[in-house]
Length: 351
Image (tube, rainbow, N blue to C red; front, side, top):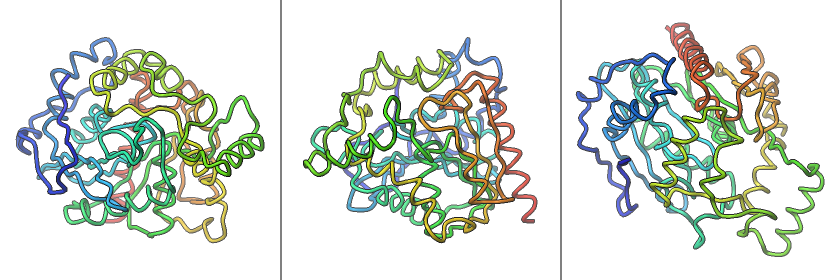
C-alpha cells in the first residue's frame, strides 16, 4: 500500500506525478459487486487515482498545517468539497473521491487538525484534542476561501460526515457561504454516551477540566488499537479491513480516544445549534442521511428538518452503521446515487 504524504514543511501548492489528463482516463465503475474484490479494485483503480491527487497542504488557523488533496479535470462539471469525520483521513476517502470524480465532480478534501496527515498540537499525538470546535470551523473557512474558491467550477456542493457535518453546519451558519446543495451522512448532532446518561458525562467532563486534565484521555480512553477498529462503524468487513490496513501501514495517522476538552466541545454542538438565530437561518438544499444502526451518534438527524425546513430531505438506511459511505455495496450505492441526483437537481434548479 503506497500513499502520497507530506511532512508539513511547506505550505506551497504542489501536485503529484499523476496528471489531470491521466485522472480523466479512470472509468466510472459500478457501485455494486465490489466487496469481494475490493483489494484488487484499490490496486487497479482507487490507489492510482488517489496518488494522482494534487497536494494542497496549507496553513490553517493558529499556524497549524493541514494536509489537503484535490482531484480535478477540465471535463468535470461541478465542485465537491468533502469534510470528513473524527479520526478520518483523505486516504480513507480514496474510493469515495473516485466515485464522485468519475461522475463529473472535482473533489476537494482536507484532514482536520490533530488527525490524519495534518499537524498534531500535543506531544502525545494520539490524544484526540482540539482547543475549540471554532478552530475546526475556521480551518474549513480558510480551506474554502483560500484554497478551493479560486478554482471553483460552476456549482459547489458539500458532502460531510459525522463531526464534519457538525463543523460544516456551524460554518454555514456563521459565514452564509453560497453552496448549491449539501449532503450530510450521520451528522454529529448528539453523541451516544453509553453507558452513562448525559448529565453524568457532563459532570465528569466539568470535573476533569477543573482539575486541569483537558489534554488527557477521557476515563477509559486509550491510544489507537488497530485490532479494535471499525466494528462499531460499518457492517462491511471488506471496507473495515481496508481502512484498518491504512492505520497499520501509516501509524502516523492513528488517533486514540478523545480528550476531556474535545468531548466538552463536542457536547456543545447541539446547544449551539439550538441557540438564538440558528433555526431558520439555513436556505441551502440539504440531504441528511441517518444510519439506523448507528452506534456513535444518536439517530436524531431529523433535527435538521427544523433548521432547514422545506429545504431539507431526510433519508434513512435502517441497516447501516455509522459510516454509510463505508458500508455494504447496496447501502453505499443508494447513498451515492441519491446524493448525486440530489446535487444535480439542485444545480438544475439554479439555472
